[in-house]
Image (tube, rainbow, N blue to C red; front, side):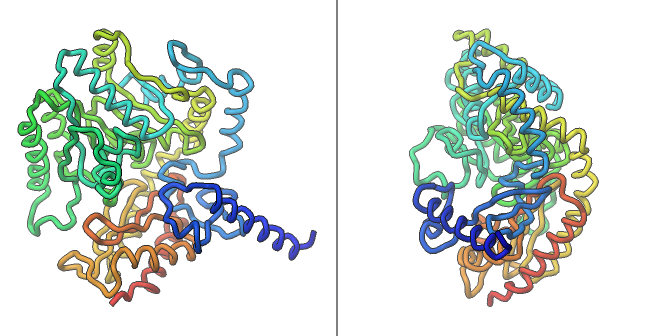
Length: 468
């Protein structure tokens, strides 16, 4: 088969796959236009930080798949070998009153990486399942202590904690919640840590005081005897890379201790190196009672998640009326998934992946900061390998007011332009109506690739930034 025949064959196969996808595959969070007139991108292979579609086009994966492919796309064979070896020995067994070596080894490894005091690991298959498990563990902990009225949870506005019933109830993104309401009762939401658009002249200390007073006043209003826990992401993903102000983590811990409220750190995205530390809680000084995780523990190569809890919480539950954690999942702690995660963590340590983030994070931010000179770029925020640009048409008012609506600009102009330029990152509209560009690449991203990403963003903004 000559070169032209190979191209035609690949084109024909791509057309067939696209037709099958539109007919049979219900894609996640995918607009109906993709099932009609729009093309469906079909990814075929990956290498390093880059992926290739079925027609041979190359893209820099600026979102690490979905905030999860920490080690990039070149270690699949090594992780696959670990999975194959485990499958040849024990392809499946549950953790329902049984244990197996991969789950035991991985639980011990995760506990060794977690902040001090978090020693007990429960495995799930996803971030949503992890947060569901944390809700149930918190509820059962309070019941075991005799605090039966502690059923309410607090989360932050615009936060994202998953799509299952309890996790969706925690979400502060009303556009995801409202279609499925009523959801789990007793969830309240407080302000997130976004400083952009806060009053001019407000100091960081004043902002921290405002946030903490709001949380404590809500607990008091609801009744401390009714509040079970508060869920926070150390760095909040939704809303655009929202970092905590100084004093927030310590103050939140004191409030939780004062009122007997459990602090749950949702590290589904922050965990396993995204911020240059194994956990975002360590990066910012949070002292959670429970950490939930997924994504990066296996670099997205396998479905795996879980939670890490203190001995106090777990022992209280095990010594309570039921003498067990009343929760279980068929695939939680799957032996092949645990083997893959162990291999992934070994690769991360061997390749110095966290060191790469720490060595390059300041450079990454400084290069992105050059985009603040563009008329549309109003704010840059984030840490480690997780950053967001907020776009505005009026930098003084920090708002979007243009001939084209922000949603149309994102869907019809910005997203297609980024894709054509070969950069996969998230373009979305903030809850306050302004466009966001979000970058959270594989943790192996080099300085040369950072330069390419920033120059590509610059060229896209220059070519499509005239919106008035």
